[in-house]
Image (cartoon, rainbow, N blue to C red; front, side):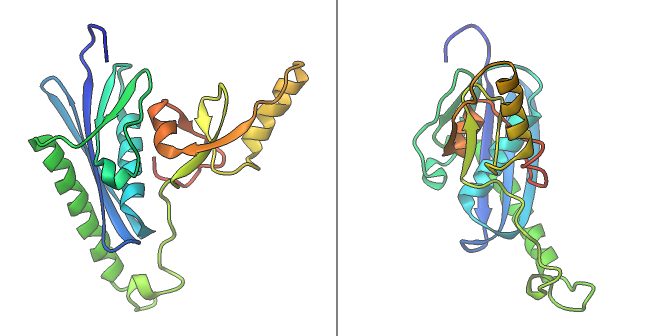
Length: 204
C-alpha cells in the first residue's frame, strides 16, 4: 500500500472441532496504540475457511475509518493466495502477539460452542443430537454472487432485491449487469457488503 495514511492491521483466525464441525473465530484490530477484539462461534457444522471468512467479514464490518487495511490470515486455511483491493490487502500469517491472540479468541469461542452443543435441550437430549434443536448454519459460503458496479454480494440469484435493482435499471433505459460468482474472500477484499435481503440470517 502506498500513501501517507497509516494502515489498520487486522488479524483473524478460524478453528473447528473436526471438519466439518462447530467452529469459532477471532479477530484483533490494531490502529496505532488502539486495539479491539472480536470473537464468535458457529454451532452448526462448518469449516475453518468459513470461520476465517466470518472473522474477516466481522472485522471489516466493524471498521469506522476509511483507511487502508492489512488483513493477516492463514492462507493455507483460506485456500487462496493474497487477495488485494484498493483498500484491503490479504497477507500471510504474522508471528506476533496479536495473531496469537486472534487464535486464542477463536479457540475460546469454539469451546463455548461445544459447551452449548453438549448441554441438554428442552427435549432433555444433547443439543447436537436433537433433530429439532440442533442448529443450522449461519456462516457465509465460500463463494457469492456479484454484479459489476454493485455494492453488495448475494447468496441467491433469485434475490428479490437483486431483481428489483435490475428492473430499476431497465426502466431508466439501461441494461442489467451480468451476475457472476466469485470467492467470498474477493468480495470482502473489494469492500462489498452483504445484501440485506438474501443474506439475512448470516453472521457478518
